[in-house]
Image 1: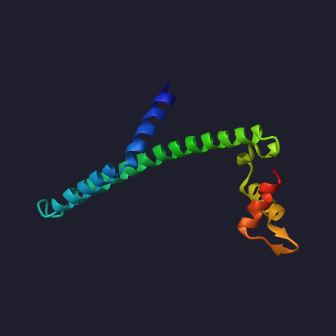
Image 2: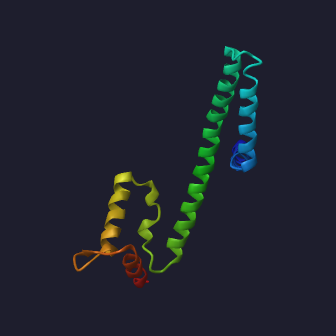
Image 3: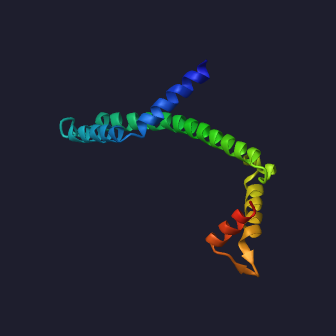
Length: 137
C-alpha cells in the first residue's frame, strides 16, 4: 500500500516538475526572492531561505526522479524482453542481459557490432550494417 502511494505521488510530482509552468513558477519565485534582497538588506537570513528551500527541493526531487526512471527503465526492459520472446528469429539469450556487468554488456555490444560491421575487411557504414542485420530476418 505504501509503495503504491509513493509510486503514485512520485509519478504525479515528476510529471508536474517537467512542465513549463513549473519552471516558470520556480523562476518567478527566484525573481521575487531576488527583488526582496534590498528590503531585507541582503541579510544572512534572506540568503538562508533560498539556500535551504532549494536544497530541500533538490534532495527530494532526486529520489522522485530516480524512482520514475527506475520504473520507466524496468517497463522498457520488460517490453523489449517480450519482443525478444515473441520473435522467432530473435536470440532469447539477450533476455535479462541488463543484469550483467558493464564490461559483459560492452563485450556483447562489441561482438554484435563485429557481426554486422565488416565485410571484406572494410568497415561498413551504419546503413550497410542495418541493412545486413535486417536481411537476417
